Image (cartoon, rainbow, N blue to C red; front, side, top):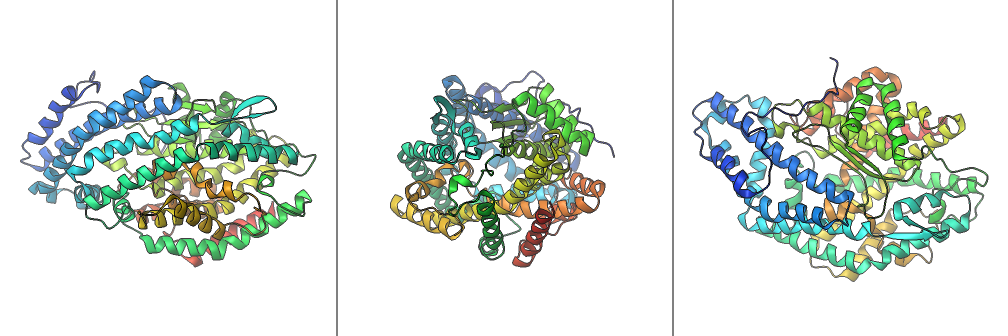
Length: 572
């Protein structure tokens, strides 16, 4: 069936069209109505579910806009206050109502008469939310929501000077591709030194977050925050043992390939000693890849690239541009990182990133574009809860798009030699990202299993895990202090704890879809769309199955997929 990017704001049937969330006094009567309503039949229950969903969508979109505006300008105090007002004044009052509405649903005799297949994952999530809800955790969640944003505030102020000009750290990173090795080293050290300046603030922030997260877990009768968070994230289909298995598989099956890639890099650069500032470089005489100059150009080229895969994909990005849903260029005072933020009521999401003109930015754009397409495809689903898809399938949506789009990167690289280099770098990254995913994930398991650790123990443990997944081909001597705190750059540790192994699981799914794409592009894109349009209405293994994939991250599965990527890389 054809899909349209002409996304429509959901019609309101319960709240007035002009309703805007400004205060608790204006919102509470609507929540009270839902809580007190009599549910005396299946149709009455289904109407109530739709009204609950409508209210959820309005609240969610309001909160998202407050966060988007604040991350786009971390120095604007009014935007910060608007976000804080929601998290401290509104959210804590909404949460008890959410819990009571969840209980009302599960206690309603007509819930058993709903289509159990259609509502299975939805009701499973409702039950999970009831299981972990504790009244005493409400103020802790509110504090955490505000504290987590301090990472963006601290990082958004970080700049360095290169050749007499001030750059954000994202902008400065492009000098790590420069042929001048001395400049690369100088910039690498400047970026690392700048991060170290705020090491105490970032350490203190993480310690504070860790304490509060541990308290959430204890209050909800969990031994540690990791176990609590796994349930909160809805990880019904894998457990901590599967994560440990993934770490081992990366060590055994991926690290040998990573070492080969770095040996090749060393030879290519003609170096006897490969240092961290050499990893993005090209041999002398080769200019760094510069696929675009401005955010406007990046948008135009991304739309053209997506159009060649499926016009619907390009239309999605064009619609977002028309609606002002893109903020792409790096600038001072903007939070670091990149994200696609779904907007539950109006449907078209928002892409935020820090582009500086590099290949990495192209990858980020198509990655977030994949998330955006997921938002468009799931928007028509009946209930807001049906659109709450597992994060693992969300990352399959984005990472598959990185690989699908490579065949259409001519819009970014008109020179065939540059196009080949871009594809090589992308495939190398597909392999080299696994050790970092394993490092971040294993570090979190340790940190939250040992919540009483000291800062010194944390730094030591991080270094130990980092070394476990670092290639012996790279010479890190003299850089121990930078490495000891290199976890400070990972936004997820601060803002979305335990959200990282998803990238590993999803990368495996994305490689599987890319295998399909190499054989039959039309069929692979069809499988991709089929899986994404289901939103969260199926379990994770079923969503993988809809995409023609196995939900499997065993040693054997990882080995086969890595061999496929290596073969593709060798053929370039």
